[in-house]
Amino acid sequence: MALPKSPGFEKHPGYMVQIEKSPRRVRVEFGSETIADSANSVLLRESNHVPVYYFPRNDVHMDHLSRSEQSTFCPFKGEASYWSISHGDETVADAVWSYETPFEEASGIKDYLAFYWNKMDHWFEEDEEIFVHPRDPYKRVDAISSSRKVEVVLGGETIAESSQATFVFETGMPTRYYLPMDDIRMAALKRSDTTTRCPYKGIASYWSVEAGGQVFDDIVWSYPEPLEEAPKLKNLLCFFNENVDAILIDGDEQPKGKTKWSNFLAETLDGPEHIV
Image 1 (cartoon, rainbow, N blue to C red):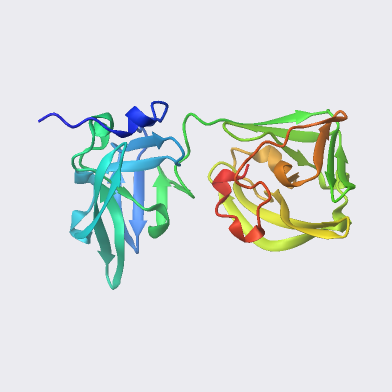
Image 2: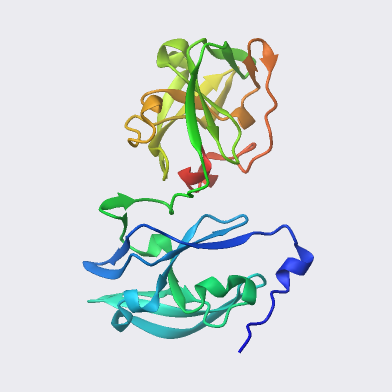
């Protein structure tokens, strides 16, 4: 029986739903149990979403799952069915979903199951634990040393000035400028308790800045112990381009761009995967 066509692409022809087999062994743990273990998962990449792993049903311990009455509809993929997951005394409702009869454009995930990332305890690719979401194989994060002069202006004051910055070029993100502490007015910075995690770089610590009679919360971050893939960022600090007065490169003010952190409040930070 042929699968129906998606209505979503007619209204949004540029929308992307891409499904490809992952060459990695992927495991999911809930409680002390490995709930899914597969070398045949697929990775779904979708516009405006982080990547998602989908697992063949045969590689999921279905005895820990119980079908619920929950369902949702996606105009690009179809109707999703849900399962709750249990292990011992712990149960999480509607933690697993599947498109059992997807639209034709999403046929590659038919009868595969996906898990809400944060409702599971641990995720692994091969033997390494991964965090936040799967890393996108088509996303690059290039950290490149530069001798160009970088100035950061905040609250009408020059807070940082450096000719030994590391420029980070990341797919789909504004260029970020990581600066040595020696080139920053550290007396104006106060470390906060905020931390976030990035699947590409590690755990970020934050600083607030007092400048021009104002306090700018969590406007600077750093990776004290970055992942092995991002060693150049160790102990360098970066300012949110969007929320400083200006960043100048060799005297030329750089466009700020518009992101979800433009004029953000500190409490709205929702995850490092979107930061740098």
